[in-house]
Length: 226
Image (cartoon, rainbow, N blue to C red; front, top):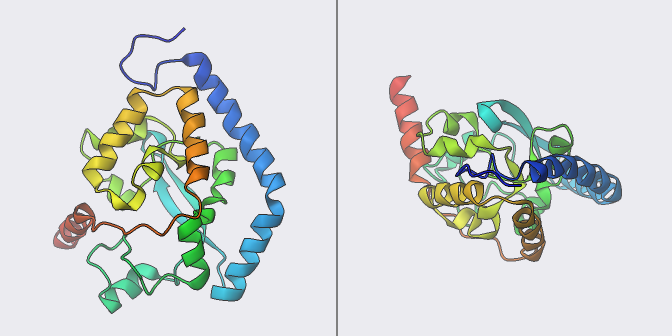
C-alpha cells in the first residue's frame, strides 16, 4: 500500500523494491544481449576518433554522492578547453547547434542516444537507475538551490522525464520542474512508460540545445572566486 507522503521517493515501498531489483536484472540482461552492439560502437569510436573510447565524467548522484558516469565519447578530447579556444559557447559544459567539437560518430550518438548505453554498468553497480533525473556534474550541483536539490532525492537515470519531454531544448528551470513532477508522481508504471517513450524517440533529429545561462553565471562566479 502506498503511503501518504507527498514525495514519490517514499511512496509505493513494494514498487521501490521492484525498481531496485528490476534495474539490476534489466541492466545485466541488456549488457549481455547488447554486447555485440557495444563492441561495434566502441570499435567505431576508436576508428573514427581514437582513444579513449569511453568518456568518464564525475557526476552527482543520490544524496550528493559523486560517481564516475560512463558514455561513449562523442566529442573531441578536452572539449571544454577546445570550446573556449574556438569561442563556441560561453557555457563551459554545453553544446551548440553544429558544434565543431562533436565527432562524426558523435553526431550519430547524439541523434540516437546510444552513447548512453555504457551507463548500464552504472545501473548494474547501483550508481544509477534506468529512469530518473539526469545527473549533473559537481561544478553544477554545488550551486543547487534547495529546490534544485530535490533532484538528488533519487538515483539519477539513464533516461528520464526530461529526456522525452524536451531534452536539451528546455531551460534549467523547466527541467527542475519536470524532475520535481517526476519525483512527486513516481510509480513503477510511469517508469515503464518512460522507457518505452525513450525507445520511441530514438533516431529523431538532434535537438537544438538552448543556451544554459545558469552554467554561464556559475562559471563567472567560480572565476570571480578564483
